[in-house]
Length: 237
Image (tube, rainbow, N blue to C red; front, side, top):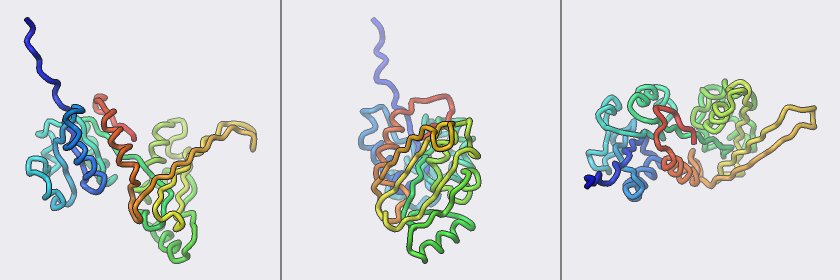
């Protein structure tokens, strides 16, 4: 008689970042994860003090200790610099799923750098709708690392265009204080004015000033459930 192998092992998930989205995912994993074959392995945050509400075994104080955590999937919901600085090391020990969302937002929802930040300040003073940037995606990325995720995902998904072929447009609009709006337009090669064009628009409700929209949390949770392990790859969601 064959020996009972027992229930399958839960996939252990680590979370980098403990803001609104990180807290939501940690709560989902704790409350709903086990029946779905998921377990919260750890949570890490740049400010370790925000983790005090979690049981000590779930608090990862130092990312260098990640190899000891026996984790299967790491979800980054912190800041793009975390993926840039630690992504390669994480991929050596687990699948790495990065958050990819960007919106046309109210001015207070942007997190910008350099001259683009100065332009945003001027837009706020003017009080109207302002196109902050329109042009190739590549130079925008270091100026708006928290607000170009959807554009970057499109560039990765369309390698024939890439970061130089995808065009980016960032708009500050005070008339949408509690919405994040994404518009994607795909145009085929053809005669000027006669090419096939497909446009999709998404309106994601969001708290005023929030970088992450409300529906993004559930979309991220669904992506986490779908990620079954792909041999050290980055999954866009």
